[in-house]
Image (cartoon, rainbow, N blue to C red; front, side):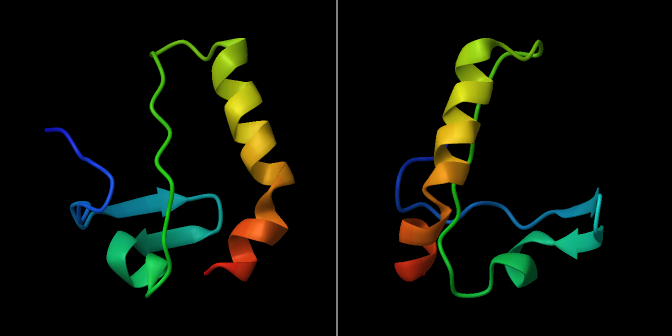
Length: 63
């Protein structure tokens, strides 16, 4: 399966560190970002997620 920008992601349930979620309910009307990386975590993956975390305020202001 491939997703493109603007596609609706499949609705899934997951056990998370903060408890169970239903993906679409968890997102609500907000946008979300998917990260894709190889099975082993590489520095590039952690760098991308770290930079995104640094941009949390600007992303939050845009919903």
